[in-house]
Image (cartoon, rainbow, N blue to C red; front, side, top):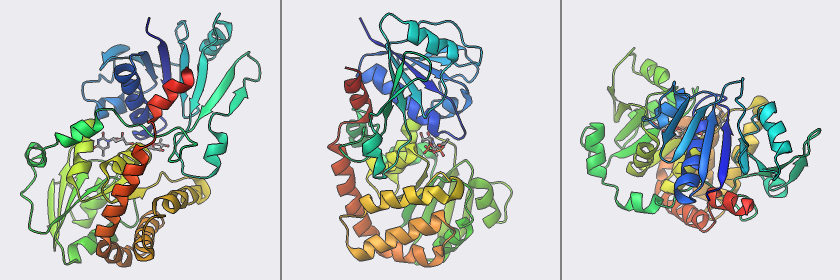
Length: 368
Ligand code: TRH
């Protein structure tokens, strides 16, 4: 008989919470043959990542996963054998009590946010007893090192990539033909005071830049840069910017494969950029008291360990400038001058990460 897993996902904002939970749910169902129920309190973002999802359905079956709308008023359901609480979202009290009363106690896992910081390994798999109920929660941290829980990566990722046809994908997106020597860049990020400086650097550079911008939080700022209120195609100097629709998750992978450089953000697109093994720039999710910059630097320290000082400095300066309103007009050309070295380093980095078991496999192993 298949084992049952419940995943609880509260959408805080953006797409990352559900982006990670949906990816994990699909992998557990399709690759590990588990019966997976995904509880989501807001289905609208899922319907953008996975266009076949209905934003208003109470129950739907998608790619082997039972997706349930999670209301505050939680129905009386039997708990699963493994319960994933994503990103410390609070489980329904009635469900917790049912877990505590179950003849065979479920394994309760809190899946944490991704971080490259050193403390992660020490906290990975730590257990915490519930203050009232006879239940223990296990903390599970994704990560970049053997002592953490790995990263989400589908088994068919390499096969999908090998079958990727850039020309067909460009056609499907309706892109203009590629110019000679053009640098193709995907741009996904949060509102950013540095955007105008970056676009100006691209417009004024020596090399033609094609920026592919999926609709989202950067679009209003990009329109302002071009003095427009709407439109899909813009040109200034050596820069051509094409606005794309928000893509499905698989198509977003294809966009990362297509581009020479990817600007990504948050958690899931950040991981996907690493699997794409192309140079990337991370816009980290901003936190209070600039705590996110510690997290950003912790990642850079690991990522840049195998590269020469000049390339490391160029990457670090661009990432810092993009995240902390630094001088992008200086950081961009210095980075561009080292993009080949950066591409080689990122390939090595991805190949190393690939040696670890992926997060879903590690979770299944932890569940025994
Ligand atoms: O949307 P995000 O900013 O999510 C964030 C982070 O996860 C952050 O850690 C969390 O605290 C916050 O949400 C609440 O960025 P992220 O994680 O990259 O998620 C974006 C998802 O959207 C990812 O699964 C890729 C997907 N995507 C598409 O499917 N199509 C697209 O066109 C684009 C641009 C993204």
